[in-house]
Length: 456
Ligand SMILES: Cc1ncc(COP(=O)(O)O)c(C=O)c1O
Image (tube, protein in one colour):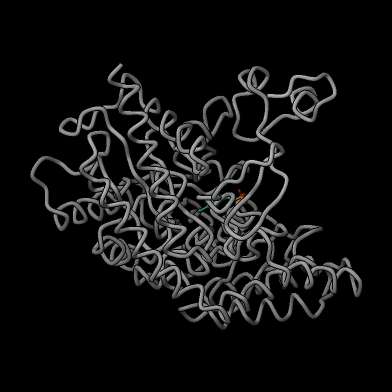
C-alpha cells in the first residue's frame, strides 16, 4: 500500500468508513482502489488488471464498459434529470420500466413499485404485507418467515430477514415478527443416510411445524432467494421449492421471491423463479436490473397484494410510502436499456451455455484435497473448502481456508469473494468460455498455493 500522507490510500484510511469491512484492520492494510472497467475486467490504481469474478456485487451483468448504458443515462440526464412519482406524477422511463417488469414476470403480476436498493425493496415488501393484512381485517397476520443463511439486505427489517449472524450481532436485531426456518443446503445439513427427497420432505415438515406452532393466521409471507447468494450460494435440491410452495398454499401464505441476485439471467433463465418453478406473489429485483450502473430496485406484486393495498390507500387517503430517489428517471432509463441489452444479446442463453461450462470446469476441482463441495447453476457457483473431506471440518476456524484461497486468487488476477470457507463465482453475464477457463485456472492455482501453505 502507498503510505504517502496524501496518497488516496492514506486519505481513504483517514476519512472513509467502509461497508462490510473490519474497520480496525482497514487502518492497517488500507484499501484496494479500482480505477477502470473494461468488459469483465477491472483495473486497480497500480495498473493491475483483474477478472471481476463476482460482477462487482453479483450485479454488473453487462460488464464494466457498456456504452449503451452511458448513452441512455446521458440522454435522460439532458432531458429530465430528476422527477418522482409521488402524488400521481410520472414520466416515460418509469412507465416503460413498470410495463416491462410486469409483463416479463413469469407469473401474472399487476404493478411495479420502485426503490433504490435490495434492502429498501425488501423493507417495502414487508410494509406492503402489513398494510395488506390490516386492509383485509387480519391485523394478527404480520409474521414473515425467512431462512437461516438467507440474505435480504441490511436495513432494519431486511437485516432481520437476513439469517446471518454478522448482520444482527450488536445491531439489536432481528425485530419482532421475523422467523427463520431451515436452510436447504443438502451437503451440509442432511442427516446421515438421508436422501435428497427425504431431506426436502424434512425442510417442508420444518416449515409446516413452524407455521402450526406460530398459528397459520399470524403468518403473512415466506421470503426466499431461488438460490441463496450471500449465505454461500446454496442451490436447493430440485424438489425443494415445490414442497415449500405446497405448504404455503395449504395455509394461504404468500411467497416473496427475492430475485435480487437471480433475476435477469443469472441462473440460465430470465428469473430464478422460472428455474425452480416458483409462483411468487411478490418478486424483488435490483442489481442486474441496471447492472448496478445506477442504484435502482423494484418490486412487482400480483393483484392479491395490490387490490387490498389500493383499497387501504383509498380509505386512508394515500399509500404513505415512497422514496425521493425511487422511480428515478435516469436509473429507470438505464434499467430499460440494460434489459434490452440482456434480451438483444441473448445474455440469458449465454448464462446457460457458458454457465454450464463454468459449472463443469469448477466440478473438475472436486477431487482437490481442499474442496468439500462445488455447487451452482448457470453463472453462479461456489466452491466450499474444508480441511477434512470426511468430517467437513474447517482449518482450525471457519473462514481461514476461504480467506487464504480468496487472497491467492486475487494475487492471480481474479476478484471473487469468500463467505467463510465458500468462494463464490458470479462473473458478468457477458463472460465467454475462454475467460471462464482463465478464471477457473487462476482458482486451481490458488488452491495449490493454499494446499502448499497448509502443508507447511
Ligand atoms: C438476494 C439479495 N437481496 C437483497 C440484497 C440487498 O441489496 P442491497 O445491498 O442493494 O440493499 C442483496 C444484496 O446482496 C441480495 O443478494
